[in-house]
Image (cartoon, rainbow, N blue to C red):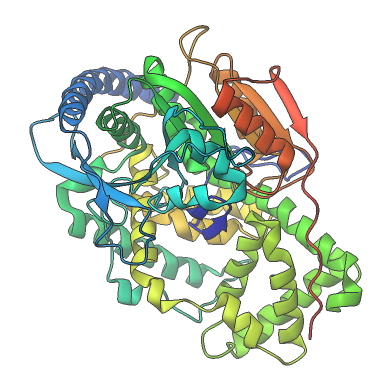
Length: 551
């Protein structure tokens, strides 16, 4: 899935989760081609033996690195190299091995941030709240930067947690100031305008294949031998070293979107190191989904979310004038696509930029009024709102290129991908017949993995047995497309004792600390008191956004 820079109540999040189709009638996904059974069994046997040996060495490496980190701690100080951060935010670094199989080899530094527990009860100024330790957060991605997360403690929804916990964020390996990864010159990364055909021609596909090969080659050339070490398993191992550096015997962790996946890996690898864990908008951890098939499922899910948005716009036809049925709204959108293909808005916004803007609206209902207004204004002759919302932000090119590089490296390294474009072409041509909105753009975002040269990881089977892991909390929106609901159900099946809280009839990606008081009540009860409901609970969905009156 393309990395999309989004904002939530917890701060700036890069939310890119990959999972299976949600409940509610999303189009199905075609079956995949598979190698011969005999060859697959032989490869599996050889791979399993090698993987066990390497992971034994990596397990030892984590213990070595964690012991060093516990002794060194984190020397928190002001964030002098981040002048835009408020003074309350403290920054430091944690040293981890690039390769856990060789813990004495090359070391990298991970940037870590913190705001200490305030001890102030927001509802009773006379009560001093006892500290419960550190709450470590990851916003997802792969490629999301959690360094700003502690600032969430200034928001009303987070103040109770900020009273009891040191809020801790960090930049995962490869991200921001943590051994940053790059695959191409950022000056060439954000391009506009660009085309985005729903049904690409053979010539267009060949052009995108060439681009994917060039991008994969750029990652290999720029990162060298280090490229193979940007993986979800290493993200989980890094988390354990951060835990030790913070002086915590057991970690309290919240992961959103992709953060739930390596959080689940962590729970499988280090269950005795877990105090409490929250999985917000859970990725499907089934090894068969990581990551090629997950992208097919996600493209299918976004078709349902796109239908939700068009239905909402149609019900507000009196405001936007884009059509009083979802079909008429689609016709308005396609009319804008055609017009932008012929003449990009402001010389910057073409069909690809329009599609990306509406894809972002699939992540968060809060975007719906803005996007509908921009589309309406554009079709009435005013392109300014659309340019403001959809044009590439060149000032963010370096950050966006870095996020994309980490996203690509982690997902390509994590698991095998089809190396024959004919497989991609077959599966996505079938899917695009019923789910055209996101399917091919999702292919182009991930196609470098077909031509990846670094070794692929053997996917870890996420699973814990009864009593191995403390009870954990899973939060999910029923119509989330970026991390569809089936992923939360699968994660609950795999983590014994996990509790699932569902936001019904809602689709915003990322529900913790947002506008739903019911969800926040369950979150606070768990993190502050260790209390959980029964195996499953639900909350009514948040209110729909109100339409913005176009002027």
